[in-house]
Figure 1 (tube, rainbow over the protein chains, first blue to last red):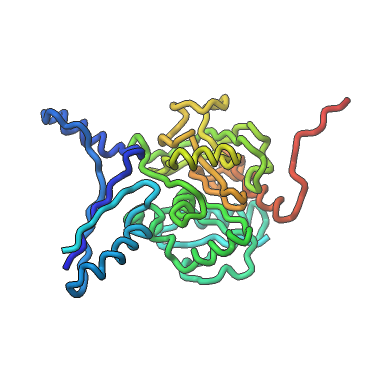
Figure 2 (cartoon, each protein chain N blue to C red):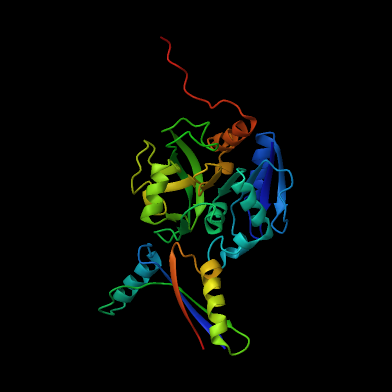
Length: 79
Length: 241
């Protein structure tokens, strides 16, 4: 079983990496790229098959360590 | 006065801090390995710059869980003096001892240069030896020094006079050109509400000896010493009547 966690910068936080990637995509000729956000993706391999038991623990880990709630949002799935 | 200079795997400004505090300021300065659970009988803590834990995950994010940081939190909450410089500032924000966070420089460039800093308030142990409103010159060296906090936190920093250092021009103007990293309100350094914990991106320990170019940074450490020794705050002389 794996927790798959996506961490993205909050909307209010400057994301210069996203802007730079967006500009690069435009230079390559991709039209209609409205916005790019560069975040992180983590996979955590978990023991057992009780996803519901893991959910609050993963949420806590995201809040305390894996993301910084001041500047980042996160969401995850366990499958 | 006894200073403890923390060492994490990846700290690289610890030796400069110990040199300045010990050899220039003439105080006792000892390294403290991050696995220590006690600060001993220290009078102030320096969280130095560097790349603790290789900046993995986020700058300062792993260091906040080192055993020594529990002791630093207790020490700070009891009113002990703590200064975090560069990566130390990032660690103190991650730890929650200071509000906000430091994110990637807006330019995406690592910036290593001299900057001018305005010191808006003398009301802190760290700025008490610097005349309010004056400009000092101290170097920066960071890739992730863009200060961010939500609007509510920024308003609180302003209303409580917690902004201790702002990037400015040589004339003291907080312009966009003078801001090397995109920090909100040109913030280079702040303190907590109780004013005993300071975080700053610039490196005062690299500007503490005139023979090496600058000594404005020494005023910050002298302020901590003066506060500890209970000396009266240096103020402008009364004009003769």
